[in-house]
Amino acid sequence: MQKPTLPKGTRDFGPEQMRKRLFIFDTIRQTFQRFAFQPLETPSMENLSTLMGKYGDEGDQLLFKILNSGDFAANLTELDVAQGSKKLTPKISEKGLRYDLTVPFARYVVMNRNALTMPFKRYQMQPVWRADRPQKGRYREFYQCDADVVGTDSLLCEAEIILMIHEVFQNLGIQDFTLKINNRKILAGIAEMIGAPGQEGPLSVAIDKLDKIGKEKVLDELRERGFSEASLVSIDELLALFSLQKLDPDNVLTILEDKLRKSEIGQLGIGELKETLELVQQYGFENARIDIDPTLARGLSYYTGAIFEVKANGVQIGSVSGGGRYDNLTSAFGMPGLSGVGISFGVDRIYDVMDELNLFPPNAGQGTQVLIVPFDAEARTVALPVLRQLRTADITAEMYPDITKVKKMLDYANAKQVPFVILIGSEEVQTGELSVKNMLTGEQHKISADKVVAFIVSACKA
RNA sequence: GUGAUUGUAGCUCAGUCGGUUAGAGCGUCGGAUUGUGGUUCCGAAGGUCGCGGGUUCGAGCCCCGUCUUUCACCCCA
Picture 1 (cartoon, rainbow, N blue to C red):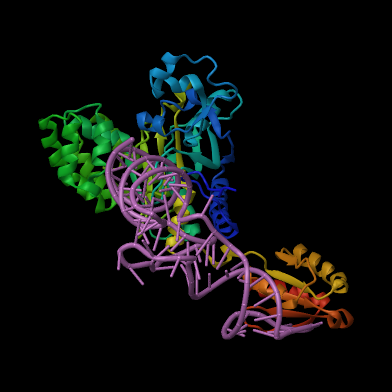
Picture 2 (cartoon, rainbow, N blue to C red):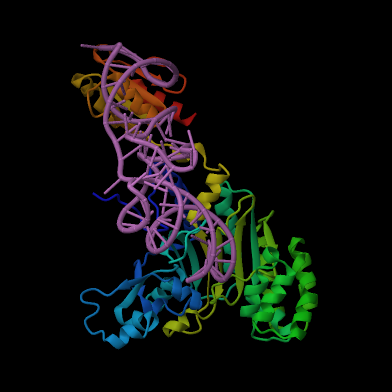
């Protein structure tokens, strides 16, 4: 007999955890549906040709690859093996587990382009897999909840994403969060300004770490990445600009507008941000928790416009949500000119945040509300109709299945934290007056069988 | 992929300098109590000391390898 274990970075979710997780899923789904997104699911595995090259070299490395079925080594030569894993992999694996939900969605849109009504809005809540090394807030299997719109450039979509983010975290009870927004075009404008046009990719990766590793280290990294000394000097000047993320959005935009006045693309990005914020305002939403952060980059290489990221304050954990606009994702599958924008909520990290900050509402972990305890077989004839009435009244109820010691049955109620128990013995069967016990206070009342459901319903609401 | 770190009962952890039969608390199960839980008391079950090799008269303890846990870097939800 060997002890069973789980693969690295994966977890079981027990009943208590699952109830809390379902609370998160339900909350997010409600918002997605209210905003008129339609549900979609795609397979766990995709062809590697669909996945490879969409997430950068690092991403390709982190893909879980699936060994071909059958005799995967049938046509291998010794030369194939000698050439190393990189060349060997495509010969023995043609499928992989999905890495995110956006690329499979793009694949779906392309495959169904003639059937979809554009703009197409879908939401998707499924696990994704990354062959990362697990650490705090990082798992090899985790759930994402995505909502995306494709087939429109309208900045209303960006505005709606901002609104959805606020609604979701509000409803989850996570009050203290920061929504960081940037625009890839602003990053491109910065690259242009410092005399390194088109280099916003490497530039982004470095300056994204500004508040983490400091100015000097950022400059070091840029030097390593081949930026000229002249552009480093310009960047140094700009770092004052980067520290303005504490200011309110309007101020940041005004300063950016001035600094990037010579960059056409930079102005474009600023304009987009402005319009997005205006739409949020016109919607009537106030108290938005928005930071415009010109250093926000995010790794996924396919973003072209707005970039979003949400961090929960007061917890040392990575971002709990992220997204942005991508103009060219479907062109990789032969369908250019389709713009999309989306947001992804990381359920597992949201769980960790809520757990650490104790934000789960008490009823999120609520299981059985009433346990019926029959003392003998005859008691069941009274108990079963009551059980049915309770369930009809939408009360989570169960009857202890065995006839055993009362102590054992009450222990069961305690272990499951059941708030109410209905005790039925020969006395109750004769009189029709059931004993209803409040397990928290210990109070016990006799209530007739026809009134017991109404009593429980009102007690559970209170 | 790089660098650390962890592993002893279901859980949290003791275990002295390498020395006889590896312990505690909590939990589980049974009883005290045949119609009433949480408290108390009594009892029981539960271990390949992660796994494999090595050093030694002797290894939970030392050495090597491996897996696992946690953390940082890279990157990311």
